[in-house]
Image 1 (cartoon, rainbow, N blue to C red):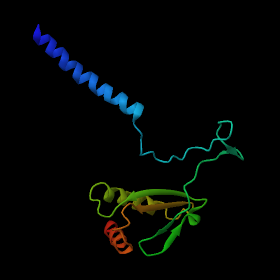
Image 2 (image 1 turned 180 degrees about the vertical axis):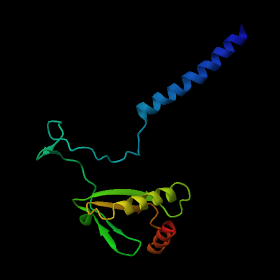
Image 3 (image 1 turned 90 degrees about the vertical axis):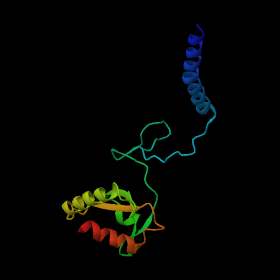
Image 4 (image 1 turned 30 degrees about the horizontal axis):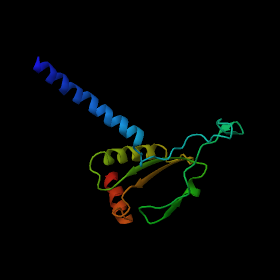
Length: 142
């Protein structure tokens, strides 16, 4: 009989305490890691805003980047184009090399298409200087 109470007590502890912790965090916790979203713009009537028959989407803010050759690229140069963006860092030894290789293949297949641009952005600008990026580009071309 005592064994049954012990088992029931352990079961309650295993099931109820995590549920109480979850409820406490849900009610009193604050998420500090909200990401921006780029969904359609909503008008004052909570409807998707449409201009000239097309949905209006939120847009990324203006930016300026430095290429592996030291050239600058800004958001104005990509205006009106479709651009596919990938994020990487040169010291990544797992998924980044295959992704960059496959993106190079995509770029080769669409090199004559003026409306499509591929942009790869480093997430480690402190380490990934133009020279490091130039070496990285050469190694993926081999």
